Image (cartoon, rainbow, N blue to C red):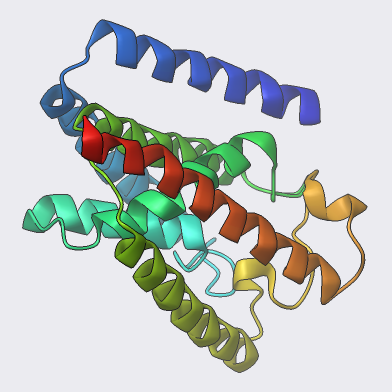
Length: 214
């Protein structure tokens, strides 16, 4: 299972590499991203609803990566770049994490696996577009994004308590083969994931801050 995950992630990473070096036109790549985002959300939710497989405890777009993906889609539709810094800080680290880890168990549906790969590919594609466009993240953007994610985290924790879900994995480790299998039990694995997220934020901030001087 883990070998297949890395094989698919490797193929998608190669595809990102080819898109960057062969196209290099952010407008064309953005059109591709919009199509993939629309297809991903429509096909995933339509299939689950049509087969009566939709589960509010697992299929709502409330994990951080899926919130970011939905936010990117809405931003493109509304032509609003106000939250691009937040989405970027979530996307680069989130996309890489999704390619390196799987949070789906052996009983997951095929459509869930497809959704996972396309979603994280979309996040990295969005990061690539902003890199090509020389988008930069300021220190103020970094601080505001951390605060916004902290507020969303609190809201998600409340939702989990109300409906018995495990979004953001606040109650238990994610299934599948991932980093948490080697981490201590709750809540220590959660603290580790938060620390990794903050490190990812900082590294993304440093990478895109350089674009300010180009």
